[in-house]
Length: 259
Image 1 (spheres, helix red, strand yellow):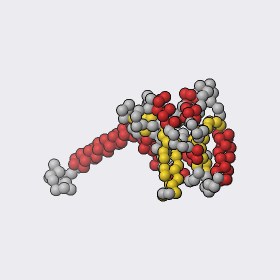
Image 2: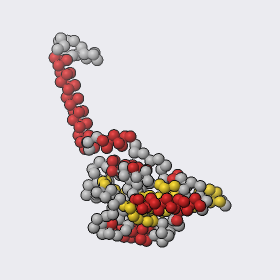
Image 3: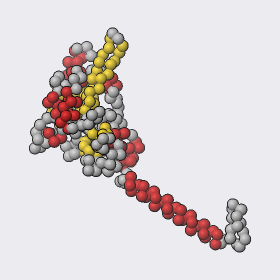
Image 4: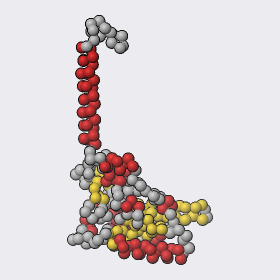
């Protein structure tokens, strides 16, 4: 079954109560190991007693359009689907953890017990069956919505107006432009820093250069070995020629007998 055009998830963080229903359901259905998470609710306390505000952030892969994990993967295991979702092909994965290290959202984990990489897949198999992502269905507070990007952005804009009327000074929509546009949009009551999100995430220049080079690490290593061997061989031949042209009994530059 075809997936809707430009599907996104909208997470209204202002409604989240931290019940972890999404976390529990995800771990149970996908058999995620203890201590490993595809999605997780992070809690952050802002302010000091007695004026403490508690914020919750649903941490999971946001399926960046420009995905650092895909750029960093040396085998092509971390890849984009035709629908624009980021997935990991276990058949190609060598668990180098480059994707883990380069994810600026901390949304990819290495399961040492299974020797696999775990991340949210946006419940892609469910989407292809015409179903919604699991976390959308189980959310007890109606925090998570799912639909076409234009529809979700309209809904998010309406929520911003409501939050301003409630007295929030700086509510915002996160994910509309970050990393080329995220498949997970968030309504925040304040700036992204309060939720542990990068304010202006950028792909590191080194990673862009690495991704632009049409060579795999194996090819680079092999090329380095060949170049090194060629250098040593050339120096050996040159040294033999130098010795052959030296007069008998003449010493070399280190004071040894050239003969």
